[in-house]
Image (cartoon, rainbow over all chains, first blue to last red; front, side):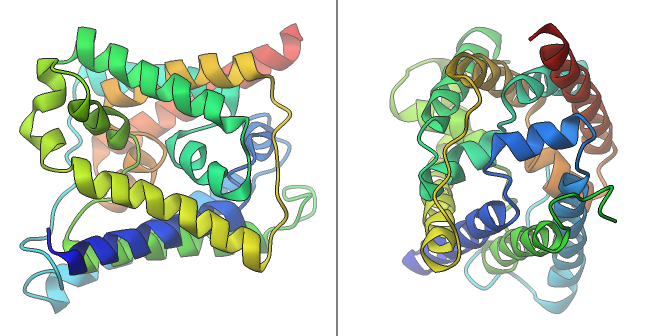
Length: 136
Length: 151
């Protein structure tokens, strides 16, 4: 990837991280409050993000021959396998226990949420065990 | 509205829109799909020789995924500097560590998390992702309720 490509990646990540902080998703308490049906805010976060992303995914390939700093427009590679659903079920158990998912575990460090380092370490360990012993 | 959103609703919607703008910019500029859980696997390819971590999809994306993760921290820091207050969670460390482990394992088994399946997959109208989101919302709600009930 070109230096310009990396600059775009960094800027995109910064927007995503800013949004995670602005929407308070970096606070596990807010996520848990949604999962316990006390505050439906997470649905607005997800809905807002999905609508804007959907628009970009639909429009970009129609407006541009190729990305500004890339070769081709990619596709999300999700597949209908037992792993997809079993993994999602397990992911939910971990998410419901901690209130933390991968994006906020990383972005949380930017708002000084140091306790999330425990979640970040757990995720790295979980991904290692998955890849080392359960990778295809 | 205050019943559904006791803390207000504007910041949720605005934050979601900004997150979508990040995903959208990434796609327009590079054609990449911005899920977040893959970095937890691809980064191991720098350290481990295990075959799974050296699949082409991980090795070929490991650099930009780390840059993307650095962007997340910088963006959250920009929010903190311009309009936010520092925040430290009171969720017990064992819940964060164990929950993180299970969530990390599950997201990588499923090849997606709240960002990959929840935002990118749903925005791509991918049925497996939509089913994954329904599944993890259900198990997360059950788990959160069990934790409250048992403590």
